[in-house]
Length: 138
Image (tube, rainbow, N blue to C red):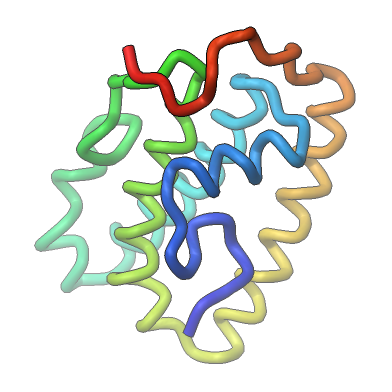
């Protein structure tokens, strides 16, 4: 079971960043989108007895994941990397537990998130990228 989410399939930081870039999302909008997924995943974990026992401590601090609080790239991949970490958790631990109806509901909710983020992007557009190549590390 997989939805049409930027972290689905073989997504990595480059594909998620490209998704953010295609949507013209600034870092502030990227964080709002990430926060929607974080809140959704945390809520699911806290309401599932098995996941709560195993994974609740990982949601004690925002943001979630190995790369939280680390920006390794000059082109602001921060939220892309962090969403990949969270998305991997969602793909492996939550999506397989969803019924087809729950998955459909999530996809509809995600569609509304995207509409909201599009409005945010209009108000806070992404600044033009710098001259440094995308794949250059700090």
